[in-house]
Image (cartoon, rainbow, N blue to C red; front, side, top):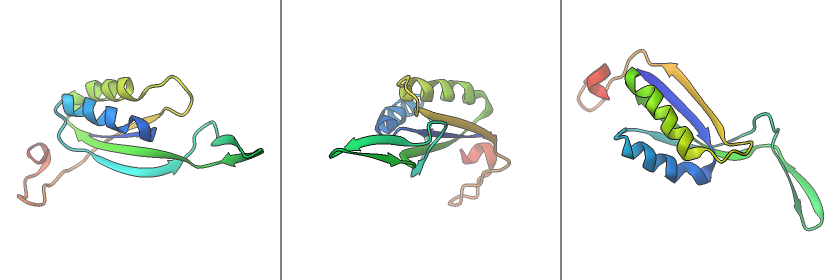
Length: 112
């Protein structure tokens, strides 16, 4: 099993959610967050002044999937979230050692 964390633009969340629902990936967690990457934030002009916003609003979508579903899940997220402009986000993949469903006590594959 793998944990996929996708950090993306907030306006892309519904498209990503719908795309993952289309793959029948049942579980996901969404966290509103702030951060910046290589660009270091945004500079914006407002009422004649220039302001620098160093932490840009983002959302993090977290999903745990079976190993054979990782590539398709990543490709789906990228297709739904990409704008082609700096700041589209990143995807991180990490191994998951164990999963336990609290309600039933089921573990690992059965818990997904």
